[in-house]
Each structure stands twice: as C-alpha cells, then as structure tokens.
Image 1: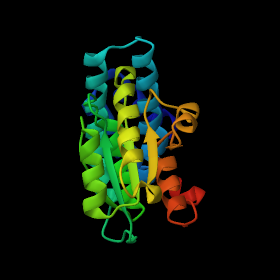
Image 2: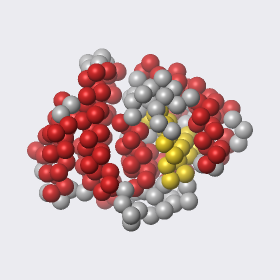
Image 3: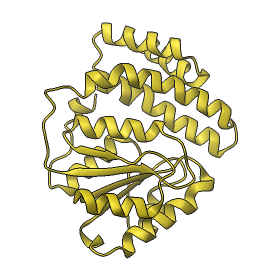
Length: 221
C-alpha cells in the first residue's frame, strides 16, 4: 500500500496523469477509501507544490502540469466521495480563489471535502474580485467564506478580500477561513481570520463555526 501511495505522489509531482489515475485505481482496489487517498496522497502533494513554487524550485508551467495530473485523480475520486448518501447540513460555504490567482487545485479539493461533509458549496471559481465574495455571501445567506491563494504575488488580493469582507455590512456573523501556500497561522491572526492548513482542516473549521463536532479520525481517512 505504501508503495502505491508513493507512486501516486510521484505521478502528481512529475505531472503524469496516467500514473496518477492508475495509482488511484490500485489504491481503491486495495481497499483504501477515496477520502484517505485524497488526504494522504493528493493533499501532501499540493502542499509540496506550494512550497516549491514559493521557493522558486519549480515554476508555473511545471506546477500546472502537476495540478492537471492531480485533477485527473480528483475527477476519478470525487464521485466516490460525494455520493447520494451524504448528510445534508443547513449551511452554505462560499468558496473561491482571490483576485489575480487562477489556481484551482487546492480549492477543488476543499470543495469536494466540504460537499462530502454535507455543506452546500457555492464555488465562485478563480480570480474572484472581493466584491463578488460579498455579493455571493449576501445572496446565499452564507455564514462561512473560504478563500484561497497559491502565489505569494497574490497575497495582496487575499488581504484586500479580507478587508472588503470585514468592512461589509453584516460581516459580524461571517466566518472567514483562509488557506494556501502564501498564508499561515500568523497571517490569519494578524487579519482576524481562521487558517486551514488543508482541506480536512477547512471542513473542521466550517463544522466548528456551525457548532458541530469535527470529523472523527476515521472519516478523515
């Protein structure tokens, strides 16, 4: 099993879509739940890619190849994660990548995990202006906003989005969760928001905002 997970990670990091799909299928056949494949296979790769990009060990074309490879795995696994037996929560999460950032892979993982936990997700996509976040929250009556960025150059977009959300009328009831390579716990504390290191933590913070206990360990797998 460990060797198959290694093959999955190598497939993502090398941008090999076929290898990623093959490894996902092998892990499923071996009995590993799709949520666990995401948690121990795809999520760590996204963290690695974010760090490599920040340190300029890899550049945008390489990152995009890896992102497309990971997306092929997500496309394979997502129907198995978000099934018809998913519990329904009366809460909506507005999700998007900040203005100036077109990366979608981390946001897609978060969306899948939130849906699998029963949340209704309004995915605004990438390169989202701050005002669009505000409009979506008001239109859907959401209490939770999850915003992401992958590039250090778009941290200004993250800051502006937080500022616009905080200045909007009625923002007192909104829970803002941030994630992605350019941000961390310190950034979150400085801007009075919550930081999620990965998709599972995003789900747990969203559940906490609703007064619901976090995912049991076995459900993270």
